[in-house]
Image (cartoon, rainbow, N blue to C red; front, side):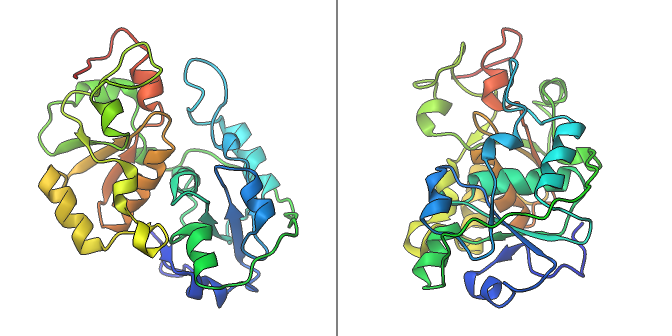
Length: 276
């Protein structure tokens, strides 16, 4: 549940953020897909986050959640405090920014927003950019998973596949969903999963902002995804589905969850059911 004292709404427009750039409570984080995006130009005062730090980075499921210690080190290095309001954005329409905000929700830090459209919308609207590197002032943030309900692990997912009111939103490309493309041991999709590629929730005519909410709700309902359902979203690494999780949250899907293992885990095992 988001606090009513949050500085900014969940989805913040560039002009709204521009009015708050000097607020000391604000921590603006640029978490781009391409590292040179930050150097090219970023929101003034934004700090850079290497998206790889949002994942464990090793083992059979390198895209899984880092340990509490690693998350504590990460958020302390970014200068996060309990009172900080984070605004996240990226250069690709919300994937890594979404994964960051999902991680914040996971550790119970609900003071956060997404800059709608990211750097593309900020730039297109003519707001000032900086090329200077902003160094965060480190803090002592002790992270732990306080909100485990927003994630789901493989075993629970297998158990609940045929449950009424439970749905899976596969945010990968249709070719991946159909098993025509991929680098995994097994290709295809989780039985019963509904495929809507993450980019379908973006509006290319509005600099990759989230599409019109009413239009999106109608599209999702036509696919069989409704706000009253418990919806699990995933992709290959819970990067693209970081964005679809955020979209679901913005649309009022109160029981939307992320599967951090995603197809990297599911598609490389021999004991997970798969459809094509």
